[in-house]
Length: 178
Image (cartoon, rainbow, N blue to C red):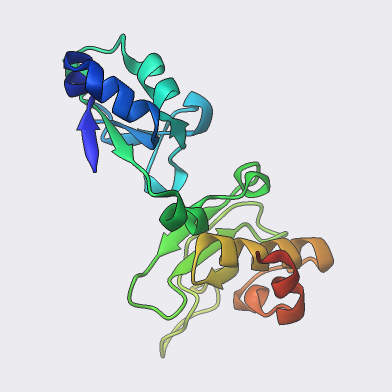
């Protein structure tokens, strides 16, 4: 559920209601969510979580042209989609394919390339060398699941590139999962 900043400004009851909620801050001007600790603008996967009071105090100076909205968060639903702090400090990209059995894919740069190429990880007849990705790939049902696979792979044994990056020891993954 989204509540506009303008609506909250007009009603002291809305300020009180918002103060008991966990929210994400949406900027209609930038068509993106505020990042953690006011760190810029992001899509849903990179959005920061704010206490309702803090969100209101941080944004109440904004005019209607900013189109600020507070997206009320259900903490139980959102917990599995939070990006771990260690991963935020690294170069990564998250892809989401809702119709796949493991819909979350975290791409990280290969040791050799230093960057994310974003190429396909499956081949077609007639592919040439270099058509497929050199990225490290980590699949999971949630961001937490894929991140656990990435953490194990990068701390236990460096993977140079490719799909093999997600073949890690399931026992170790279980250790990291809540």
